[in-house]
Image (cartoon, rainbow, N blue to C red; front, side, top):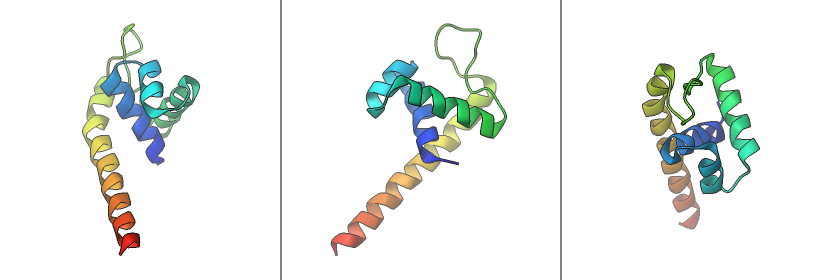
Length: 88
């Protein structure tokens, strides 16, 4: 699983739209959509409720959310530790 996909998922949840997520991540909206579609395909579930105009999590998306946050946070911490190790 690619961390960029999880980051796109979290940014979409946190910012409410794919456009806002793309702006926050500094990438194009098509890239965020591609990440979300790939993550849904990999997990075999829809992460967002397609019946709503707003970006609303599906029941599966709710289940994925906390684990996605934990994984991304762990990767951020690992990168920081590795960077600190290079400085020493």
